[in-house]
Amino acid sequence: MYTRGELPPQPMIQGSITSDWVGGRNWYGDDSLTVEVHQFDGGTLLHSESIEVGPEGNLWQSAPVDLVPGMHIVATGDQSGTVKAVTLVDLTFDTLDVDTDTVAGTAPEGQQIAVFVGDDEAHHTPALDR
Image (cartoon, rainbow, N blue to C red; front, side, top):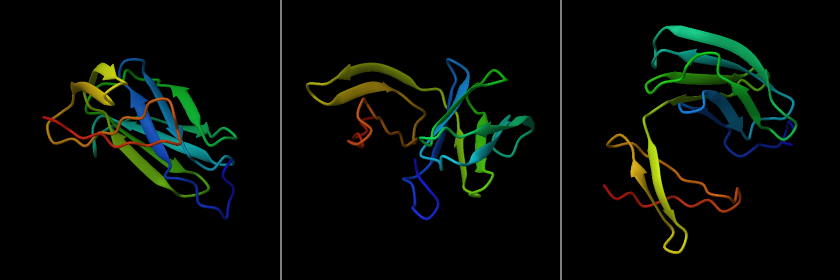
């Protein structure tokens, strides 16, 4: 758990278009988040709720609305004031080759993506081949 006075790694917020959930990692374990789902960035607010962060700094919640590409999720730490946001995009993950350290799939042109597989400590930024 991250405690006040020590900076956690960058908190993040995420959403699943396929399974309709909202999650996050690396938040303070004693914080709660106000999570908003908007139709698009700057668009109509579709849902807002407070979600408790678990003691390890993680959260997960079923989304009360059907998440679709283009929706914008904003999470604000109620005590920390930290704000993180993500706009959902249509993304595919088609193959993973551990021998060549290669993944393949599709994403909107010009989007930066990151792939994390299995080890939270070993972060690798993939080379993008379009």
